[in-house]
Image 1: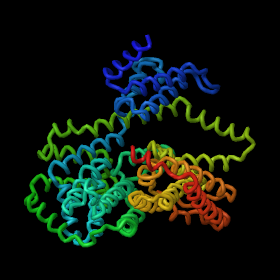
Image 2: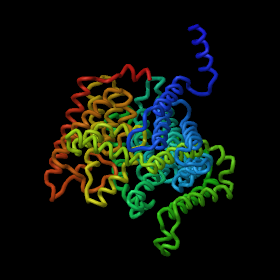
Image 3: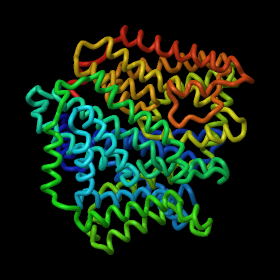
Image 4: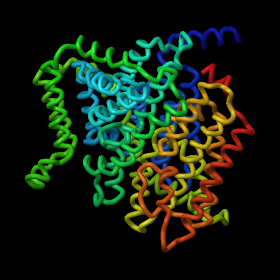
Length: 562
């Protein structure tokens, strides 16, 4: 009997188009939540929506099927269950409500436009141009890759398309030209350095432009809703606010990686020859490339609201309108065709999962789940006899980077901006700074602990990037990959944030990327202890995190298996 059950399970596992065990786990989660008594303060439909939302997140984390399919599942369940409306028509209207959001379409259309960069070869030509101009030395190639990312970022909202589809092949070709190949054990010549620069340039440029990555327009929308439309960031204002920190990061990052992970080959005159040869093989600028350049130029002027500045508010265009105009221009000029639009799977995948997750968030708020959760958390803190500030500090300092992993960290931005607008200060960003610094410190702890040269190089460069407030390289490249350092960072961040809460530390200036350099935002003549507490908390975060990493170590063997 047991053998028959096992045989049936194996058959189903091989026959179904999804991962059977994770699917069963997600199903059990849904059933368990639905059978759970409805908590006080929520009605049955609101709790059913919570169950659907949590099941969707679990299914995505467990990778039951691609994220687009899981998002489609959420749409189907919401519309069939009618948890948001008493009628089937109302339920499907609610389930599809987010697909009318212009900002979601901005991302989709921008991804479609970026396809022209690859099809025409303009993206490769831009990258090769910078290599030809700056490639006499290895560090020059690094800066060339970073500048290429910067130039492409406003028009390429897909990190994968920009960093992996355009810049990475150029970087890899240059490395191969110098016979720098991990398979041959020669990656240290130039490959490791160039790969690290390529890796770190991507998240930096993603933060610099509204259209550089998918979450940015969503942040703008959330900010506008949180402030009652009184604060609506334009493409221009976003770019101006991020100009200085972004350029500073791009200026220092290639140099820092060069010092921390120096390439064996310092001079690379062949790179210039290689780039020029490749450009010569491409021939002169084609007509389609010229159309791409012209379209990008017009879009950039319109996104920057130049017509509005010259002729008045009547000439203002919504960013999504500009994106559709650019796409239509490329199609009618034959630069890309309709088949290119239809075959851009990443754009349509983004539309489905982005729209579904935004819909779930909006409906949770509409049914009062968000307000109920906030009220329950407040009551729990009050009942515990603890002050809300230390509790909030521990939660934010400890789990903020978990939010980053799941890509939902930008959703907190409206709350912070609302605090600055209403009170002139914000505690959340001060706590968040400790969480960010903790992951950077965990990288430095790994550097001190490990004896492996490749891990040392990556941990140092990722730690440096974390100092500037960008923790994705630290998380995905080091701490989460090695498991224990990530936990150490969470503990160190929680303790550091708890310490600064005792000093009533707050940020008095908004920080786009909280990190070590933004600690000065805690300075205030009216609250002199704020900055003092910030410094003590940051120091404690760094020391505690590094010490913990030295004590517990890191799972280097497990990392190699993965």
